[in-house]
Structures are given as C-alpha cells and as structure tokens.
Amino acid sequence: MGKGRLEAFSDGVLAIIITITVLEMRAPEGAGLGDLRSVLPVFMSYVLSFLYLAIYWNNHHHMLQVTRRVNGSILWANLHLLFWLSLVPFVTGWMGENHFATIPTALYGVVLLAAAIAYRILQRAIIIEEGPDSLMGKAIGRDVKGNLSPLIYVVAIASALLSPWIAGALYLLVALIWLVPDRRIERALAAVGDEV
Image (tube, rainbow, N blue to C red; front, side, top):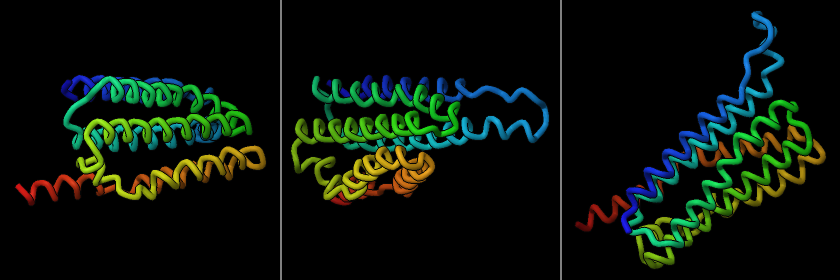
C-alpha cells in the first residue's frame, strides 16, 4: 500500500486538532489590556500545545518521507498516535482554564507521554516493515531525544503533584529540545542521494 492516503489523512487530522485547540480559547470579558491577564494561562497552554502539534506534524512528515510502503500495523500505529494527539485540545483547555492546577497539568503530561510512546511504536512498525537497514532504521540510530523525552515526561507528571509550574517548565523543555531541528532523516536522505 502506498503512503499518500496515510499522509493526507494524518495532515487533515492534525489540522483539525490545531483548529479545535485554538477554538477552545475565549476572549476576555473586558476590552482593556489588563483583562488579558485572566486568559493568560489559557493562551500559554495553547502556545505550548501548538508547539507540540507543530513538532509532531514536522517529525511525522519527515518520518513518512523515508517510508516507502505502509501495512496494516503501520496504519494502526498511526491511528494510535493520532488518538493521543486528538486529546491535546481537551487537556490543553482543562489545564489552561484551571490555571495549571495539579491534576490537569499532570494529565497533560500523561497525554504527552502516551503520544511519545505512540510515536515510538509507529517508528518501530515502520522499521519492522522496512528492515533495520532501511532509511528509517539508519536515521533513528541511538535516538537520544526519543529516549530522553519520555523520562522527562515521567518526572514532569510526578512533579506536577508538587508544583505544576515545574511540570510546565519540563514540558516546555521537551518542546525546546525537539524544536531544535532533528537532521537525522535529512542526513539519511542526503546520503542516499549521494550514492545515486
């Protein structure tokens, strides 16, 4: 099976998720700049979630660039990832509306952790289908960021019980780690281009 439908479907779902996330934000009651203070936590949670969704979209795009074929396992692994990402608007709104309260902030981390695990499962499904010597297999390598992120999420979830703001800072740290462009797949594609 080709990958075109998978890419188009995933792009559409992520676009809808981003749209739903922004629609969760409400304008403040007043018209003064001071009135924006009341919606600042909602805005901050939106910015963080938009950043995460953009990172997932970008990395998903790169992952599918090196994927040649898709099977049922890959389709289900992709749907698993999209399921967890589809919960981002809910946890974003709950965390922002409750000014980063303990339980909503911890649940936000649980969703991020589950999405990270789902992304890893999707990577593994592609490598199993295409082999460890495939472009994906070679590009992933030791996957320091991929191994470190879930650990930080676990620490952030636990720290949310002590200080939700520490958890929020750790969520931001993971996003910043991934914001630095990951060139592994681009290098793998360039290497193949050099060999041709």
